[in-house]
Structure formats: structure tokens, C-alpha cells
Image (cartoon, rainbow over all chains, first blue to last red; front, side):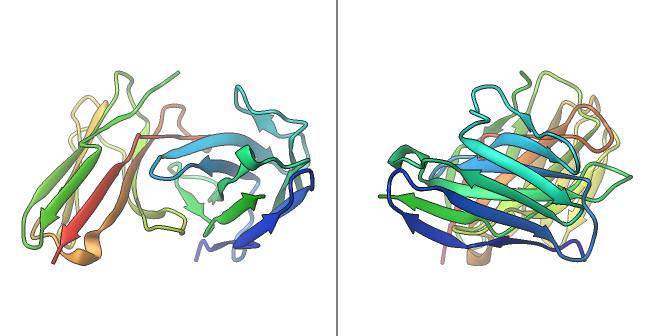
Length: 116
Length: 112
């Protein structure tokens, strides 16, 4: 149980285009999902907390107009990188937690974004 | 901003050796998780510790939570090449279901 999927697993796009990444909880409902960014050989950096039915909460320094998050249902959150530039190239990972009990998160397999 | 420092940052050892990874903070955790991540994949949850002084074992991996719940360690006995990966601790200060903060990570390489 507690499986999280992401799509696409990798994407290459031209500078200036927008890219949408989907995060789905396959066998459970997730009121809250999290979006992380990871640079090579570094740890995960939380970008935003995605709340079903409400606006996302962004971490300090993360541009909300550039990284649009939509959490339309209890099993789907999307991250759209708008007007992508080469510096946005990174590994994007989402996670979701099971409600109740201790705070454990289950991660998707990640999406490798390369902006040319 | 709560910080989680992991040490060492990098570790390269021979197969069969033992190792310990540390995760330290000045803040008290409600709970702490350890994850392992392989290149190009998402982190996989290994264990969650909640109670101060708690020790959990997962085959050759032993996880310990500090008595004051400010630090944790991961000990691997007789490391194998399959243990290679990025080990991450993640702390929850708030309790309940909210965001966690990840440690700086420890990159482990086990050489056959």
C-alpha cells in the first residue's frame, strides 16, 4: 500500500515553455501532498505544501507564480513549471502522507526536468 | 528554521565493514524518519522513530532515537553493495500530519 506515482518520469523542453507534472496517490487518499526539488548530490528541498481544495502553501523563496500547484482531488496534485528556463532543470519529487498516526510520507519516483 | 545536520556527508567503505550515520538538530522532534534514495528514484521510507531512546532494527540496519529526541543514528552492520545510496533523515517538529524537514543527506558507497 501507500503507492505514489508521478508522470512523466522525465521531460525535456525548450526554454520558455510550461511543463506539468502529475502526482497521484494510487491506493489511498491524500488530503495533503508535498512537492520537493532536488539538485544532484543534494538533499530534498521542500517547495510547497499542496492542500486539496485550497491554495498551496509555498516555502520562502519559491515563486508561486512560476510553480503553479493544483490539488483538485484527494488523489491528484499537479505542479506546473511556467516559462521554464535552464535553471529550473532539476529532479522534482512529490510525496503524500497517510492521515493519522505519525507523520510518514511516501514518495513518488520523481520527474527529471531538463530545460534546453 | 530548523536544521538537520547529517554526518558524514560522504562515506565510501568496503563490503563487510560497519558504519554509522548521524542526524543531529538543536530542536526536539515529534518523530523522525530515515529514508534511502537511489539515483533517479524517490526516497523510500526505512523506519520511523517516535519515542526517546527507541531502537529499531531492520535486518542489518539499526536505528536509534536519542533520549532527548534531538538526534538519531543509523548503524549498518556488514555493509553490502546493495546498501549503496543516499540516506536521508527527516524530522517532524510539529506532530500530526504536516511538513517535515530533510537532513543534509549521507551518500554511502559500498565497494565490492
